[in-house]
Length: 217
Image 1 (cartoon, rainbow, N blue to C red):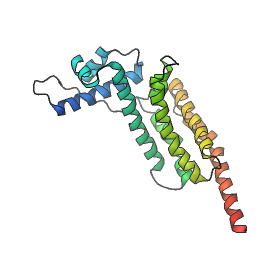
Image 2: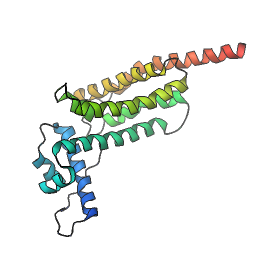
Image 3: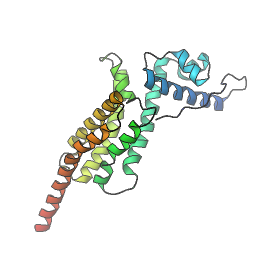
Image 4: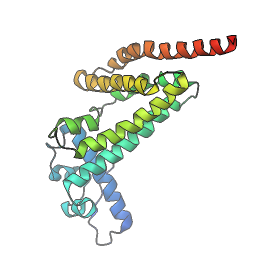
């Protein structure tokens, strides 16, 4: 989701805090693009500094190591994605069902972007040692926040088990992301939406029955 910044010389003798911040942004943008497109292991430091227009010393000064840069990319990309995703659900208001039904149209628009390379968290965990906790913990933190918002809406929808519904939708989200990455077909989001429809309808129906029963008492 990150935008690529223009290249500038970060090695000026007059470089200060503002220059460091600019270089940091360009390094994060370049690393995000290259990690997502080519993979973390396949992307070397030289490729990152070339795209960012900085020096290797600048990268190590700001991040200390490639591992720290990867962590920073995942944290930054996760924050940007969550802000976009939650805003996409909330935009236009409406009830919980209206917000939840916006999930897959939003994903479809993301899948159609030229720089859609899948989920950076799924990709990071997928290409590293499966026993390693480093990237898995960051991915789980990201997932917990996303599912937490969906669970809140599921509760408002009237689901008797909002956490279960949130995880069901989460599985559809993850599956759609992987399928879209492999097939390059944004339309997989439509199929996921069709699958999610009955799940949302059942919860809404249960809420209506409960309300009707209260009125009958």
